[in-house]
Figure 1 (cartoon, one colour):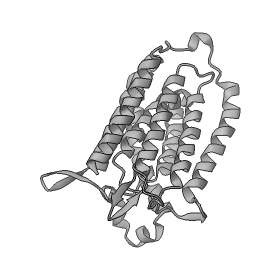
Figure 2 (tube, helix red, strand yellow):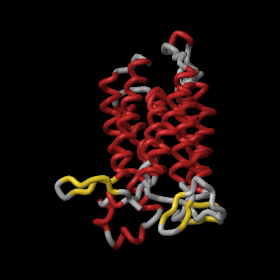
Figure 3 (spheres, one colour):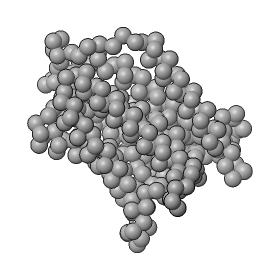
Figure 4 (cartoon, helix red, strand yellow):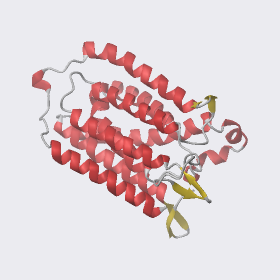
Length: 277
């Protein structure tokens, strides 16, 4: 149930697109702030992030096409281009983004793990904000819990709320951890593990994803693969990417303010979600 917001020149602007744009913009700004704080080339990082956003969108769409509805899109190839109708797979975005990042940093002789670390908090908050506009609801509630959302006469699990609340928590953990990491890549490893745990939890309440062995879906399998890969990567990269004390950036000490901001974002997002629906 995609929520239309307004119409411009015959084109309908939907909630999902607006929230994705706000999420991407917020993540982009935070990543640039982190690049500056760490003394990296902000212009080069900015250029990389723009390409990464484009690749992430393409990867997310292709991931959905290949995983969820391959036969339909094989017979209706032009439908692949209709992203505005919905259909993105976050794991596809992650795979495409990681592969592109490896190629890009090698070409321009950048440190992949440093770039991945600075982008991680932005990815988390961008996902949280973008999920507010998601139009996929969960299963019908067995009991009438007060936070349920009524759609077509049924009281459903608001999986969008579950996921953006978990993503905000993930953002807070990453934001507070960003100047306390012991090796380059640690923050990105935490992000990959945290996100896939979040997604696995929410997946138990979602509908529409292909089942492998009930109640586990293909998204559970993808999450398990990502977590295993992250743990293996962490074992190797921490041996060669240790951060020396003189390499550490200026540390942030705004603990209480960080908590207050995240709690406020969670409250505003929740109120807005229920208001708009």
